[in-house]
Amino acid sequence: MKANEGDGSIAGARKEESMPVEFLSDDQAARYGRYAGDPTPAQLARYFFLDDAELARIRQHRGAEQRLGFAVQLGTVRFLGTFLTDPTEVLTSVVRYLAHQLGITDLTVLPRYLERKATRYEHAREIQQAYGYREFTDQPEHFRLVRWLYLRAWLSDERPSVLFDLTTARLIERKILLPGVTVLARLVAQVRERVANRLWRVLYRAVTPAQRARLEDLLTIPPNARLTVLEQLRRAAQGVNSVGMLKALKRLDTVRALDLSSVNLHAVPPARLTALARTAILTVHPASPGCPTSGASRRCSPTLARPRPWPKTTPWICWTPC
Figure 1 (cartoon, one colour):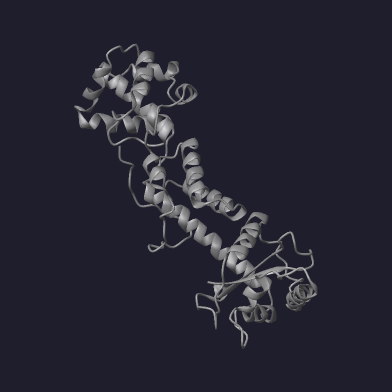
Figure 2: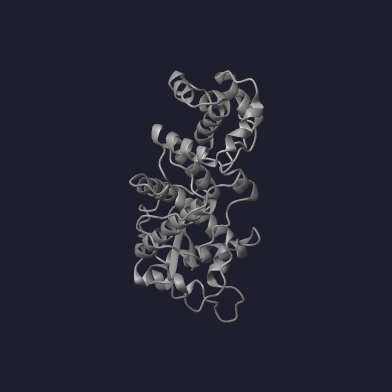
């Protein structure tokens, strides 16, 4: 089975062809819009059970192969969120479950469903119209999807692969046909890029020009030193003695001298702030004579968070060059 490919769109955003979308694992991409394994009994009952109205509709079609093929396409789009290029490429357990409900004992009739090519497309259109399935780009559902994805990405710190799976589940739940795997991956990447740009703007505006200048100085290497001021501040004092205590107090004075206690980060969601703090702790920041010109709001973005060992009045600073 091949997942449908197509061009996606994102409301209010320009396309970014160079944006990386390689966050999907090979297994995740292979499972998208495909049968990855036998459905569980609960899944069979939820997605492949045919009620009386559905049985009546299916029995209007002539021939066991057409009735079984229609039922397979109906169950497939419910379960996978898409119509397969070859609707007969389904698991035997699924075919057997549907055939039993239709009173069909010979499962070998299913390949004959492909003898007339137009039939599968006619049935797909009938299912789409009768059961309310919409195309990925149909409005206003596409706008609602982008808005939901943007809000989720802004409020949480979920990995792009997780957002991809959540978006897929939402599309299936809301009866929106899945686009191609690269289209959906590109949409997730675009939304996350817009969220990141918003975050940089919020952080940039949270500090005054004087505070920005002091933070930029953290990325310089003082005379006769090998590390930037920031890297020196991040290094714990060595030795439990008077010398180590004096160094720790000096480091504390240096941090307080930055005068960042007035910075208001209430506009940043807690999950985002936690992720930024984690990045600040794990990232090594090289010396920077200046910040690359990639827009004023993203030239240099401050990240302020307070790990547990530090007093609440003392912010831990990570001044991140773009």
